[in-house]
Amino acid sequence: MKRRSFVSLPALAMLPPTMPGAAPPTGLTETGGSVTASAGAAFSSPAIVDGNLPAFYPALADELTFPLAWTRSRTRSFRTWRRTARAKVEELLCQPDDATRFDPEILDERDGDGYLQRTLSVNLTRHSRVRAAMLVPRGRGPHPAVLLLHDHGSKFDIGKEKLIRPWYDQDRLGSAQAWSDRYFGGRFVGDELARRGYVVLAVDALGWGDRSGLGYEAQQALASNLFHLGSSLAGLTAREDVRMAAFLGTLPYVDRRRIAALGFSMGGYRAWQVAALSDHVAAAASVCWMTTLKAMMVPGNNTLRGQSAYFMLHPGLHRHLDIPDVASIAAPKPMLFFNGELDTLFPVAGVHDAYAKMRAVWRSQRADDRLLPVLWPGLGHVFPPEMQDQAFRWLDRWLRST
Image (cartoon, rainbow, N blue to C red):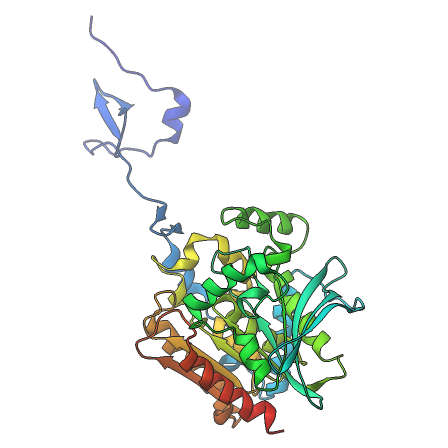
């Protein structure tokens, strides 16, 4: 008896009509005048490509036109643009402003090398009271000040101790010195600045040092949990940095007109970000964190691994502004950007493009001399003494001469 093949009526209803004599649709075969689906029909279309990017990521990148950028703005008033751009960034922080009293309390004070070493507790936000490390130069004030912003580095046992020598914690001293040797030529940047006459302040970001407990893989979970709670890890970090800049401005021995922010790597991102968001910050020095969004979101980039990216990710922001556009909200403040030519985290092309975007903004405000973007030949992701010395001289120019 001749075997017959059947296709159910619902299945036939889903098939496109076939003209007489035409080949059946792909994945279907004819058997005895009927049409049947071929088992195991091949279908190859990868949805995810290298670096956990969707296969259509170039199309998504092309859709980003950064309509809120100053160079695309329809308003001729830079102040109006800056106010509008900052408001958009603050909206997307998903973290409300905080007016909690700081209520500082000195916990410990000792003599240092030409300055006082001080630890104090302070209300960072309405939810967190933290221990801060501060160095205060001897002599008559008020002094210029620098808010020090530590890096990420996937090293969570130390935060503020990466920048200020931890006289208060011998258990962390070895770890801090090793970090300083690796990235800063053996120096503690905060101690160097204090010797030059600056008040310096450093606080741990959530997950580091006194606020530790975070692991590398746990960063995504922490970020998602904060999103569920109506907050944001990156937004919280940004608000805390703004708060500490404001705190410096309340101290009688600090000249509130001469407060700068300085940071390396993720701290460099935080430095230009707080300069863009805080009126208390008069200048900033950002080391080893600048590029364009489109240069960053490509296969092979460190950001694509997730984890650390959540400390610098404000959902939806890049529908409005590119990375250098956000930094440009700080214009025409004095701003220094150092990147290493051999830094694999921030390839040269992206750094050049970002620098060009920022130059256009500062130039439009006749403030070319207030922007110092430098690509250092032969250096990678480091902040060695020769870089530090130039950054210190630049800070002196803008903060010690006024």
